[in-house]
Length: 241
Image (cartoon, rainbow, N blue to C red; front, top):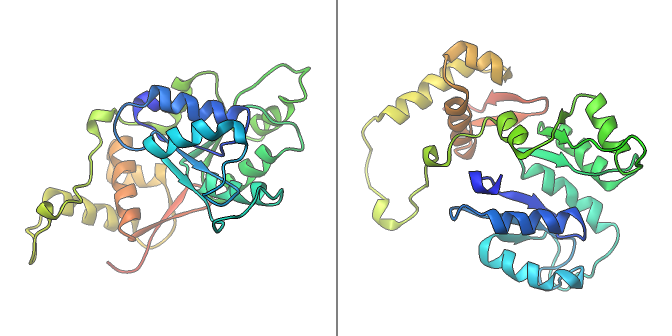
């Protein structure tokens, strides 16, 4: 997934969290952030200590985020609380292993409440660490057997079609800019959105755009504050702009 330009978000914990960060750093395509670690301590603390080297490599090739002030120790309540940030920053949450009572299922529930996709990897019917994943799949989570399943579900465009924002001062202009094809596409999509919540499929039926183009344009409008993402995978136009 990292080789296809996706940024992997996880929690720097032992187990699959660490493996996810390691895999993202290993497969990083060289553009954008390789991985984001959401931690439950202050940014001047590394927990667990075994991941000190990993944390430094993430800081060099990705991002480490915390909502807690410097000096905050690894307090138990902080870790399930930070999971809402992991799901909220992500387009989809993939549950690799989970017992029926686990923090992973809390994260999956938060992802659903935030309108994000939930996916799960099945396992042995005899494993307690698979029962949570099986429960998610029974309730509609995407069954994942390979990275390709994730890419197809997200309808990820090829990396070469993704555009990088020019944040340099050389790219800034003053005064009104001419109406470009991109501006016209934005206005066309805003008209298609109307002012009521609408699903991606319904919006695609209205405008007839390819899925990858539609998702990319919606993300652009989200970043501009003109479109909001609602629970249940719905989108809504914000304001009259």
